[in-house]
Image (cartoon, rainbow, N blue to C red; front, side):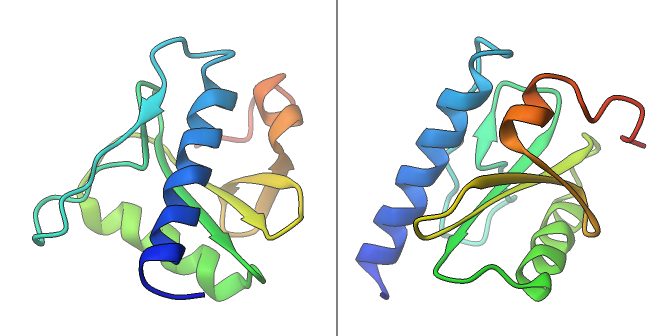
Length: 116
């Protein structure tokens, strides 16, 4: 999958993640990024986190590390979260490149004490 269909799949996942986070953060909504090289906005805004969403056929550790690098390079001081989903898979939230939770566990607070 490439081009427009990949963007559509990614935007759809960003809306799904915003909807999930809205259960805890009512102001959660899909962020809008410019494609002109401007400051990188989070994929989901309205939370205390900088959320990057990644949806691929197969999620690799490289994709996760690159997403954390993307947050770091954005200059955003909020704690980073990388939310991922493989095609036909479950949604996972990474609080660190090596630490993940199901989205349900994260939103229910199972992660408390693990964020820096």
